[in-house]
Image (cartoon, rainbow, N blue to C red; front, side, top):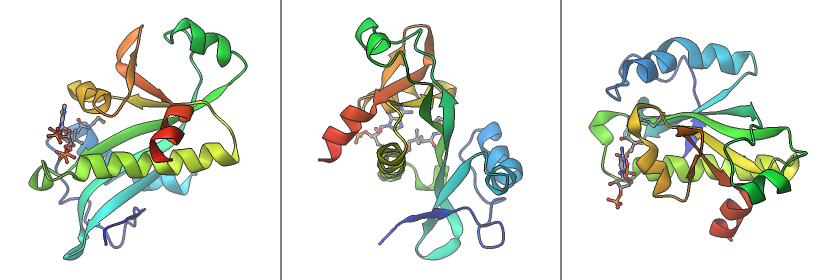
Length: 165
Ligand SMILES: CC(C)(COP(=O)(O)OP(=O)(O)OC[C@H]1O[C@@H](n2cnc3c(N)ncnc32)[C@H](O)[C@@H]1OP(=O)(O)O)[C@@H](O)C(=O)NCCC(=O)NCCS
């Protein structure tokens, strides 16, 4: 069975990971572990079950200030007293493992973790920073672009909860 684990700098071969986008590769190599140690973000990796040091893909989770400006009016009203949203800050699959469903698997796993976090310390939205024109990937799974920032998309926790129920 495949599962995500926290990035482990001694176990996981970060230098081998290559998703084709240097800022994402470099983040995993140089920054992700430090930020986890500082409790600023959490980076989870999907290990290759054949060789645990090989990273199939990863995602990074944190929180972000709630910016209601670009939301539909009904959501702006509903969540006007909310101050934070969950953030999928990064998500990438190594090019060698693309097109096999791992991107979808990682996204579902990230959404489950954030749903659990919201069940414990409520926040109403999950936001994703879809760099490098990957917005279509997220739209396929129910995310909606903010009116004022096309590379930033959101999904409500209520919709995530329904999709897993
Ligand atoms: C986007 C990414 C995570 C997808 O990973 P993947 O493992 O190839 O995706 P999957 O095999 O799970 O594909 C799931 C579905 O998404 C679709 N898809 C994959 N990449 C897509 C993209 N860039 N745009 C739109 N749809 C995409 C697939 O066609 C598939 O749909 P289908 O089942 O109807 O055929 C991967 O291409 C990647 O790491 N890209 C570089 C980094 C990046 O852009 N990250 C996101 C922003 S930080």
